[in-house]
Image 1 (cartoon, one colour):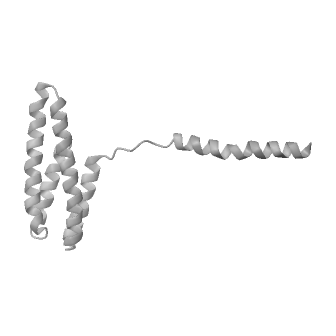
Image 2: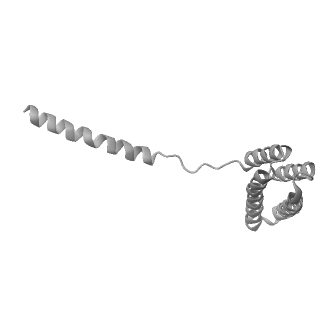
Length: 133
């Protein structure tokens, strides 16, 4: 009798971790959306610090990340413009045009980051301001 009770207990408790793992997997959080404004601010501060320290290779790598964020923002606004009502399209188009202009300017300034440090950071801050529009 004790053996049967022991066997039933072992079988019952051996299945409980599997159930708990499945429940934990089902309750896993969905993909978190990163706030582009904060991410852009962080990258801007990071690249400014690297340029100040004259770490141009590291700064170029960070600029690649920033350029991706800029392109992502421009493409998101283009999608918004396609689905927006007619009265909203002109304001979104102005933002996209401004973002494209700033993207081009930062790309030209990125050739010599140390020389163009102040202008470069100013353009990045101007781009960041367009993220809130």
